[in-house]
Length: 99
Image 1 (spheres, one colour):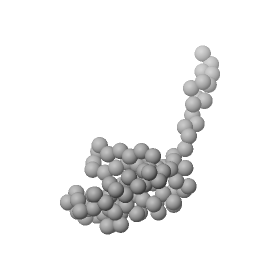
Image 2 (cartoon, helix red, strand yellow):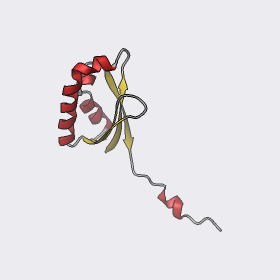
Image 3 (cartoon, helix red, strand yellow):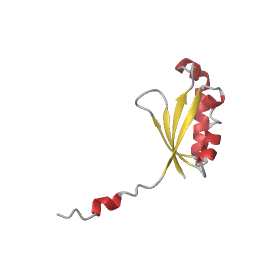
Image 4 (spheres, helix red, strand yellow):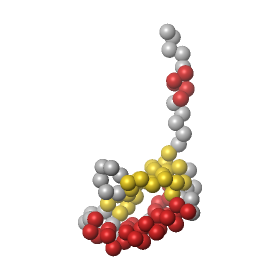
């Protein structure tokens, strides 16, 4: 299952509070990438944070894995996990318009 995972800063979180965890956070991200959970990872452009395209058996499995990030374990971030599926509206492009 493909998932869009967006970090959610928790109340009181700040870049200063993130800093002591960042090296471990990057190492953990690399391990998750090598393990196949993380397929793509991007910096958000609207605020500090990341958007991850993940692959997991279920939303629950992804949430369990994401909870192991050092920032999540420190209570500084949570995760919004959105399941993705194939875009099935292609047929509308080829439907007869009656013209």
